[in-house]
Image (cartoon, rainbow, N blue to C red; front, side, top):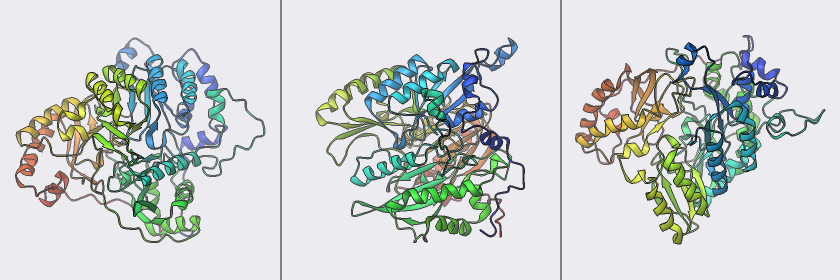
Length: 565
């Protein structure tokens, strides 16, 4: 199309060459896994293994001490599942629990993309762990890397018939966008390679996508998937309780780099309406446009948001329509009223009950792990992972509610009944000690920071005020910090950039207010704002909206893009 460019005049990034020469994502992974000399992988294989659902990490708490002892870093691996819509059976829960205890660090983590993570797996245990996950009828294919990641959807598919349809669509979309290479099955499941078999990638092509790609489906009035943060988003349009279709959004993304003004968080744009049967073709149209026109030279600028801003919204929309084979009609009306999860017991359209538990930072260890193991042993429904790191014990018959409640209380899983509304809504990424990108604490710091800010909330009678708090150990944004009404983004050990002013529906980015400040500076900045909010807010007015109305936010920074003509 005239005016489009893939920037192929520039040298490809090394990762592009790696994918091209990987023999269908095989690389030398088999040899790397068999090498007993090191706990790491060969150069290049550490990138390829991401497309198999795993990251290599090391314990940064002991990194310096091991260096002094002339030992290699304490390497281990994180494994992430592909679990579209976040639904797992009790049997799957028990199997993952056993794997986390046997091979991992003794805990499970629920991610902000409705998936499980197991941390602390040694290289020698990678294959048996991934093989065992496959035996549970889950997998880790494409859970990481330059492909479509886990497809998110509204957390409770039995809230209505339309929710059930949306969850089914998420599963179908995830399956359709899986890589075709059999490398995963050969390396981890001992499948024999068939010489001459067609392993072409009709959707991805030989080098897959320029960067990761995230899809989420929201069902109004709850924007629990933060649909505007997704590379590709779908907003379900319900008419008379039935699924009429979706509004299509594209170009969201949270990641950026400190000090690099070429990078920025961005909310997705709404491109139009599609019918239910167009979901997969439309997704493929957007994904392949990113495949063909995304930046493969600079990985910092390779996400879909930068492609859209470089090409221009009108040009990108025209490209989607060309690939879809028809014009997109205007988006249909919808309303979001809230973000986050609804805690406690709720009844679905099928008459059964669903208990939404608060899982702080999504980390399940110790007593909580023991308690959920006992629940899984008696539970006859399923488990639903929410996009906000929480857990729904779903499909409970009324007669079984007392048994579930007893276990919840006995094992301290009733955190949703205690603490502030802010605590119930807060998100934090993994950060230190295992994330290689982390600049400061997040998950480990969240409980202490919440305790500090809850003192201020109590002082100003705001304990019950639902304020969105997000903590991120770096600017890459796994906890979606730029959609927090209050957000701390790691800058250095013990120091953060303070962002304020997103809205509660996930439709407005926050703005940076203070840079590189410590906890005392954060609390000192927040207290007068919270006091002002307590005394002068309108009825039902959210904290971010109040700050905007009162003129307490700086002007948003313009996006530094130059649209191709």
